[in-house]
Image 1 (cartoon, one colour):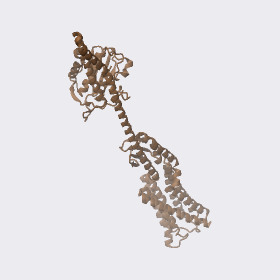
Image 2 (cartoon, rainbow, N blue to C red):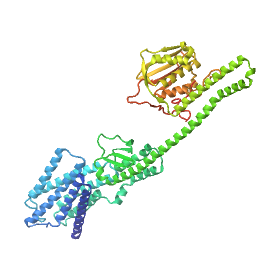
Image 3 (tube, rainbow, N blue to C red):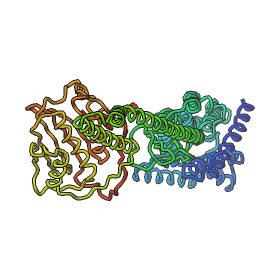
Image 4 (cartoon, rainbow, N blue to C red):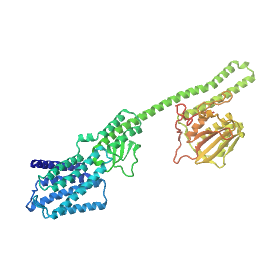
Length: 598
């Protein structure tokens, strides 16, 4: 038994001295408040075991008795320092802190003023029994308080942090039991003393696991999070996705590694890509800033200390995420460039095809009439020659109008229309445009607008839209035609209504498609089917829109909406309608780009 006690004493000495050295090294490396408190705690405990080697069981001199008291006082500081360590993470109330400090000072002073410590074979005086009870109560109360705090705080932490906190809590509880057994066993070979020594070894081992677990132990503890981390890395390395998808793939493993309450991932430009849980109204616990990616992480106060290795893992994953985000950004830019080139090529091809198709008829007609006049002109009666000339004039006018419309569409497709808002008086402007578009039939148009109405619009775009609508109203509808304008919610709304049959319901969806003229005879009703396409594109280039609806009394009503005033600080810029030229590139611009006239 004596040999076992001796071996346990040497083992405890070495274990707690090692704990003090490890804790001191961590404090030197970290220089943080929590590292300072835990270093003082284990240095005090290691010092106690070192001093105990020089204290005889029954010191007979003043120096021996003083060393014995100093050893006990050093031991008494451990539970208070451990409590101070937990207080760095969760500050207790001021009243509780002052009470613990007062009790600690009182029990240490009481220790130092003790007359003496009874020898092992000597009966315990009553005053010493009272002190012994106070000693055990103080130690067990403060140590248990710190242990419970650590254990409770470990819930919800990542595996390694939770295991480390639980190990420290178990060590504190075990040390309390060891102190109780050692205090009750006065003989060094008594069973209680042996049990207390064994329990001290177990407690020291638990402290060591909590303070600095071996790498193999860390790997075993981290296995659940490691599996998810490896899966996330595989996804990052094998999938070419958008930046948002990259962030969505890694945000959960990142949160699990450090037990984050909330986490936000930003790209290199600072744009938030993904957020897990609602970030609290407080600064992040830790910020990881790697090239191409940065993380704002909100964890429990314990995570930065107990999850130091996990933070390094998080930094590594953030660096890999930054690489993946850069790759996704480059992939997106390459995809956008490829789509733009394909769209430009398709626009060019379609424009050439449309121009050739629509110009073929007037060019063929003109060519045939010119050949007839050139070869047979002398034999054709004057009346027929005059008719041929009139037809030639009509066809050249039609061709010139078509070329102008195709050029309009080309400029709109290239987003090269310059929008320059200027103040206009709406009523006289409407009168002027209607007179030009309706010609001799201008008296069949009713204009309804308040005389003092004004707006700041691009007159070219305004005139193109209105003239196309008025022309269509006479071409496909029936008089009377009403042009009405009103201002509402910072917008200028101009509607053109005719009294015809309106647009067939099955044709409404295709109304703004290019060259769509369903139910219209191309021979009897002139037109290219481009008017509404151009009008809608001009409206959108101006920041507005063109819509169709059927009034209650029948007929057709087209309304274009333009901003009444340019945006504050806006400068004249080229038209920027999204998806110009849809219908050519597969996007639904009828619903938002050049479509076609009725």
